Image (cartoon, rainbow, N blue to C red; front, side, top):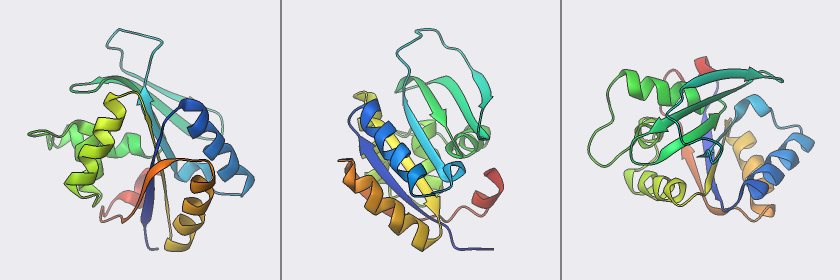
Length: 162
């Protein structure tokens, strides 16, 4: 199978993340290779839900200990669920952090992403071949996303959760 890489960006606002996603769609980036996670302000309940809304994009909302109620869209859902199932959530990492770490994101960067989520920022992840990720990175940078990192995905099942 193909090479898998990811670019992860911290977006300060939902509008910033949405602008980056719209620009990626305009550039014909496969939206099924995008994930976004952020706090859900619309509920203070600990609801777990799984939704499939248009374009094959899946959304999941749950309370993540250490972060709060979040909404996750895209393939990251599968990686977070796998982290929860495998009980790899230990120490100072949340389920989201454990999922990112299992994909090859260094623990220091994972802690930075978790801190961003806790402070109501959004995490945007695009994955694919090295060429796709490089293209996505250029597009995301034009939308003023902060702290962009590029990683090689080491997860052997990354291709299965599209």
